[in-house]
Image 1 (cartoon, rainbow, N blue to C red):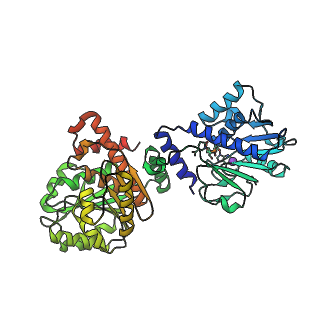
Image 2 (image 1 turned 60 degrees about the horizontal axis):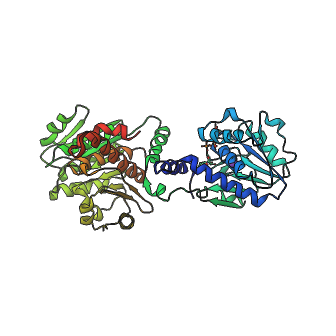
Image 3 (image 1 turned 90 degrees about the horizontal axis):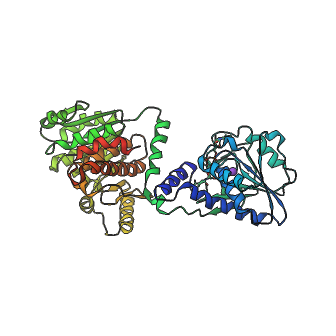
Length: 474
Ligand SMILES: NC(=O)C1=CN([C@@H]2O[C@H](COP(=O)(O)OP(=O)(O)OC[C@H]3O[C@@H](n4cnc5c(N)ncnc54)[C@H](O)[C@@H]3O)[C@@H](O)[C@H]2O)[C@H](O)CC1
Ligand SMILES: [K+]
């Protein structure tokens, strides 16, 4: 089962993998035509009611595939109002070949009188709200007609996000849906056929450009609140927390604060005047810092804990206390990763180990990415946290899902790119769920590395990635 918005991601990912939407539409339309052939008898009249988007586009393709079949096809639609280029191209192909197309200007005068079969291609996954005119009147006319109705993808008026049906919706007798069934569709108790439209399986496995659609959706639902992130890092390594914090800002968070030992505060500040510091007395994180750090932590949407902290025993003890008393989303990177398998916490952790850190945590790795993905997924389920395992293919998994991101390049083995990844992921986790944040974080950071490599090749450094993050998120 797949929701309408998830379908849009997969669809755009298919395009990124070289299978453009117009090609998918060709398969969709073919499948619609096949269903019509099953429902209609030779010599009958099939009336297709087409909407303005790609749902209508599917029907235009279907009309072309039905040309050789012994039925009369009449197509009702409004060419000048089509909203997508591929629907328009398929409409124009019908006009050029002189198919029987008719303008549907006024659906109060819709004439379905001689139809033996109706095809409902008005609205698919692109619907928002109840049916508006002229679709509502056309739906009523179709429902009132005697002919069986075939709905394309979903009944027009059905919301593939929530699985709810508008009162004015088309009431079909058959549904031909694409790629996978949609939530609530089978509960309608109408025969549903699912057509394979040639979307590569990896359009759902790989994080690709389509996944960036999640960013605009998150921006809409969070209405201007892009999150506040606290980075807890620094000690033996001074640059790491500063890199992570700058990555947080580049990835679009509203505010970042860094809590780091006073011994490195000056250096962290030196990286950027945009960073706000909460210094902790001393040279490294210690158990005595936990109280005040937790107070800061509660004021933020997400934490990034680990960059540059080091592996001193007391530091790890403090890190453990912080993670155990936190209940939001936290990205855990570098040395504190090794304590994750033993921590008990309400927090949602996104752990970002490289292969070595993964094995130190007790996880397993393999040469083949599919095997590695399965091993990481198993380990994520054991931990009950999200894992983002860095490598030439980054593997992201939580207790029940896994994804693979293929962006990035060998130049990124330079120090500091992991800190950037932790920051980007921490920023994204303020508006996305942890699994999505990890997937998009891996994709965006690798893509920023690819953009940086265009200029610097193998000589790229972590700060080059920072500048490329906004472009990598487009
Ligand atoms: N996902 C895939 O892989 C493929 C899906 N295909 C088909 O495309 C539709 C979705 O197409 P889209 O253009 O996004 O939207 P729709 O055609 O469903 O509708 C958009 C159209 O409708 C107008 N509109 C929105 N809400 C309403 C309303 N409440 N009342 C009236 N009109 C409304 C809006 O303004 C637009 O003009 C999917 O379902 C599949 O059928 C392709 O085949 C490619 C592969
Ligand atoms: K439809």
